[in-house]
Amino acid sequence: MKMKKISNWILVILSLFLLTGVGAFVYNAANAYKISNDFISVPLQFNPDDASSAYKTENAQITVYGGFVKGLQKGSDGTQSIVIRALSPLPKIIVKGDAATTVSLLIENVNPDFYAASMTASSLTMTKKTVNSLQVSIAVGDKETISMEPVQPSSNDSTGKYKYIILGDNRDGYDTFGQIIQQVNGVNPVFVIDNGDLVFSGKTNQYRLFDQMVSKISVPLFTTLGNHDIRGNGRSTYTMLYGPAYYSFDFSDSHFVFLDSSPGWSEKRAISDEQYIWLENDLKKAQGKRIFVITHIPPKDPRSGVTINQIPNYLNEVRSGQNWVEQKLNDYNMSKNMDHGFQDPQEAAKFETLMSTYHVDTVYLSHIHSYFEYTKDGVRYLISGGAGAELLTENSYYHYMIAKMDDGNTTTMVELPSPANNYITRYAATAQLFADAMYKENPVAVVFVVTGFGLLILALVINIYLWKKQSLDTFGKWLWDTGKYAVKRFKELFHK
Image 1 (cartoon, one colour):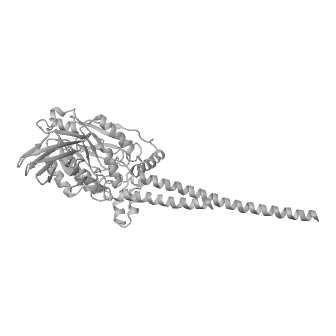
Image 2: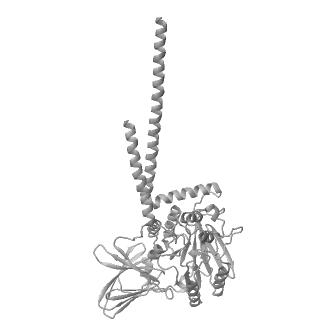
Image 3: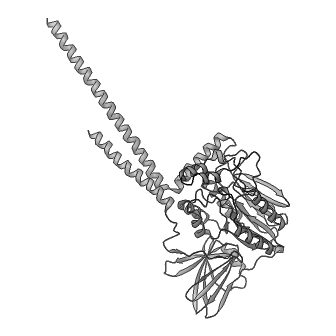
């Protein structure tokens, strides 16, 4: 009876643990993203034509070129800073006073030392806040304008001197991505390009973990959206953290263009008409520079034997079956061999024509978890999707690229430890990757659920024991009664 009570209590406790764990999973995935209790996001104001963002305080106007105003950060001393996130290595900031005032700026996503050294004519005091942010206090008078305008390195000085890193599809491969971050800080490039699929399914807890990891990168990180990043409310979270879906910047004699092709996996159209209009104008203005275009989905899949992408058809046919659709989106055995290029061949041809017409040097792409490089009409297309997501295709491996800014735009591949090149090992590694990611994204929830299942097993063991004990007691009583009866009959017979 005592064991039965213990079993009942265990069932009650395990129910609480399982409910708490499941609730934590739902909360982590569904709650709105909050950067911190002391941070207030502001709606994105960004003009891609000149890469500018504007913000007005009571006594000043702030305009950023090559970045955007992200929000307001309250300090421990009660002061408030305007947070600017850089969308270029050397953003320009103009502060115009409507009255005498002091403006506090927190500039994030920069290399503090490189940015400060580029401000050769500035008397402003800059304080390194973190490995990739600067604090600047600007005292501006009534009708006075103060500019923070870093000097771009000349093409003569930058040839072979600067390098940048290209990677993509890190997603939930946190261990591999963590290794890359450590190596990036050792290489010390001028910036890093992450070509989309930053997270697995656009959930709040995934973006939070990604943002914590990249906060350790000591140089600017420039991103573009992948198809996994926009699932659920992922696009709005991305916008809050990293800004516009498309933009461009200059560095020395090079021009870098970031495009949003994230809808192209589940929709017939990859890049919007609005972007194409902006893109052509941007490429026209960049003529004479070396142009590099960055987007997630390639116009064409270079692999042979791929099947038609059926995801758009699934979405059209099953609008009400979200779970079923998600299952299809996650069916790696099926989707890994699907065509990973644009769904519309005419759009692919249009994109490639724009690239060749405006003499683009290289188009950096991801989406396929492998490495491919090919040339079309004088334009190099480089697909690099090995920054952490699962590897299910043969001859693929984890890697990232280092590009040197020289006459040949030399790129070097850095290969990382990868699962053995066979299906069984790679599927086992994928299962382990997902289990590890589940814990990293939801540590509290996983602990509660695992503990709950542990208690469930314990309760089952106790109940089996009680059932077996009852059966044994019944059998023992039968043996005892039978024995007693046999002895009694034996005595009766013997006595007679």
